Image 1 (tube, rainbow, N blue to C red):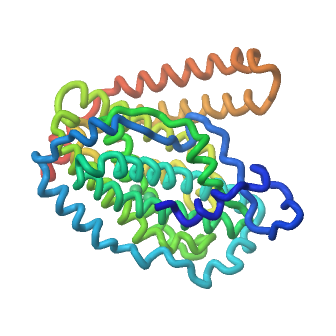
Image 2: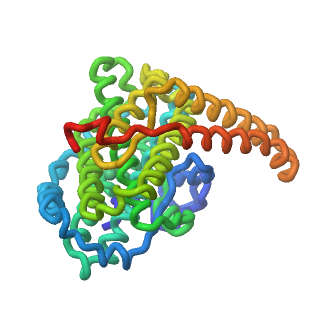
Length: 372
Ligand SMILES: [Fe+2]
Ligand SMILES: [Fe+2]
């Protein structure tokens, strides 16, 4: 299945830029150029499908079957239906808020769609050899298609749409072996859950900051992400090697750090969006990181020492370096000269990441003994 919006935008675009419409074509939403790829933009993944197909689920078969049964119930089948609240809502935003909100929609739509592509491809490639896993991935692809389509419809309210067909064909795919896919997608599902629910609960208390009706949908929406995260939790339990031993402890630390640091730097750089919702980007991220870290201790063998001030101090250094890099990029000039000026900031980022990685982690069995 292709998300509804992808069908619409998958048609040959008049141009790939936000420009006028050719003669004879009814005006519709403009096709927006996908944001430039940076280390902070959502990635598209691919993996070793044969290894996935050959995976023996026996060690945790019962839990995976129970999760698949939950997916079949399709709790949000009737949830993503647009109502009258959307009519005219886009026109109420001032130009600055509109800009940051559209960026938020684009980023969210791209990550939801990246999930859809990976899950869909996974379910297609392992269908005959590993039917239980394939079915779970198909249900998750269904959910992500809905999420991406719903976000893309909101972009249309602003006269824009992401060309998901173009994105599918032209985005660079990052290869990860299955265990790394599990760490990365588990984290992105759980962090997605905490991000959506934190915004939803905040806006419940501050309805005056609800700048767009899409936020009304976040409560049920985040339950989809939570279920997807639980699926990867169960999948990792069925493959005990992925969460036991020294290598897995190191990789879990790496993925936790990469996901948290990327989100922090990106969100602080876009703090205006959070301000528009009446949120402080730093406080919001601190809450989401702490919660995701705590949740991850249910399955990861170690989690990060986010209770240490050093952790946050070093993230702030990353923010400063990122701002300096953005200034160099904005100043223009020949590419080799830019690279030379960026070098010290890249080195400083590398240094901070190494120091963060070397911070002593917390053993999850001590952190969350009750659930382990
Ligand atoms: Fe999603
Ligand atoms: Fe998800």
